[in-house]
Image 1 (cartoon, rainbow, N blue to C red):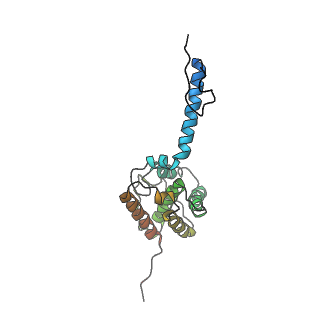
Image 2 (image 1 turned 90 degrees about the vertical axis):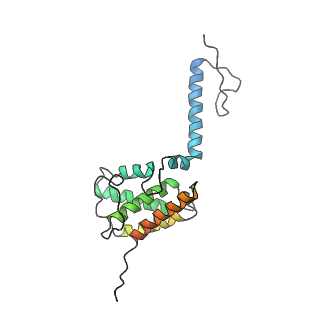
Image 3 (image 1 turned 30 degrees about the vertical axis):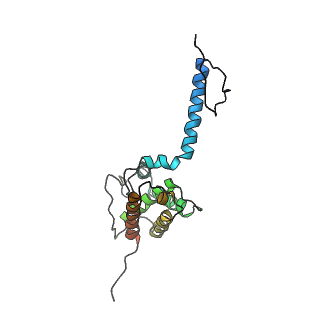
Length: 190
């Protein structure tokens, strides 16, 4: 009924010259496709994250949006824990800072900066969480600063992953604005 089909994938468990029935071929093809997709995900993980990026701002990516959306419905303590973990993943990273972790740390730092009493950064309501942030620990200002400094270093996929140098410069500028907003105000009174 069905003439056989051949699977040409080198990762397929079928011998390259074997002929499969239609149902066997379908199963092998699906397995080969799965293996191929798995390998591509591993190899191009950061590029896939960046594919959902439409700008250079802290919330201009699907991953940052997902991070913010993930705060919805959490208790105050859970929100604090999620933000703290975003900073810790970056500051505790060894030589290389993962791009996804960097994206989340930048988003978390922008949220912290916008929640400060002396906030010098505003978040578009469409980008920020639907519910107001809880009162955040004072230590988050320093934690966010440390994470952003780490994200800007050469070992960070966020710092080195930009294809367009103008976008890279604009991204650095955006991160610097968050850093400036996190810096404690200086009193110039004498």
